[in-house]
Length: 381
Image (tube, rainbow, N blue to C red; front, side, top):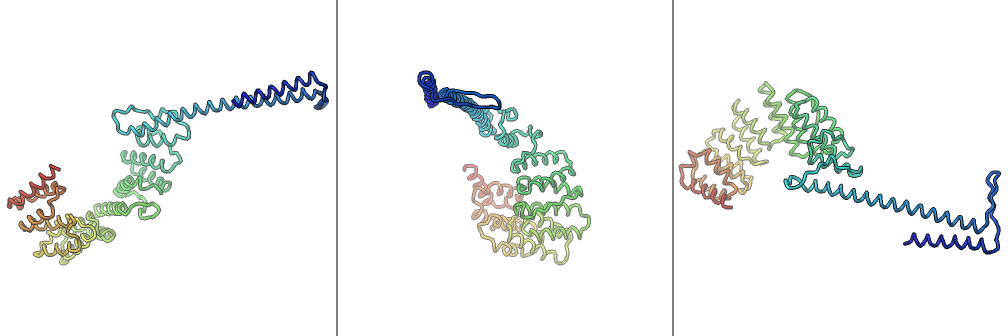
């Protein structure tokens, strides 16, 4: 509406100027000299020409604006369609009823290309081979994870180490995303005697204490397995236990070595290791090592080891149950099952434990009935 009003206004002004030029006395002429050319034009005609040129400019700019709006509208509509397709791809995750969307064939504008790449990484691993790094570290780390997994599958240890080192240097802020791949590469490198210099303890990597322990313990166990000298084996385990005194995996290996190579102080050393480990991270499996010390006062030692742990701790309960069972203390076993393991969550563990210790536990019908009742209650939950 504004365009037509403006256009009508210009037409009226031009008409008025032409009318004044034709029917009224002249108010003078305007002369324009360009090089050796002189042009004279009536003032009214000059004014009408200027207004007409103004109208023409306004007309051209309006047409350009209309074309731009139409193009933008089409672009927005197309972009909305693409966004809708990408949203469908996100929401159709593992939905068998949803139609498949070929992400690689979608005509994606440059501002949404990164989103398309992220979706391909998330949902279309077959197309990952063709994806290059995007320049967005939070996305590229997943591209690198795919490359590392492929190299691990191929068993190319040297190439794995090379790509892993490059990835660590370039994407160190995002290492928790590829920590499992790093661990597998470190294990393969250690087993293959290939140098892989990576220190997960550096704070800039932001790796969890749990991963740090897993990484160091895994490599220590590989060193332990590959080392032929018994003294060197013992030192490797002792250092690992000193670094991670609550890790049952490394402690179990150390206790096995002590049992294989006993000396006068072995029993005391084993009890000391078990006591410290249990106080840091209670674990029922340590009870079996305590049994192997063959002490006559094992029950009292077990009670002392577990004294600092709350009675509600399920690992403490199982630790004492294992000790009581191995000592054939049927009444104590019966009491512990009835008082502490009546929760149906323990039904599976109890059934397995009963099978493993059938000869002892089956001697008391009350124990059998109690375990059967707990199992029945669990099935009815």
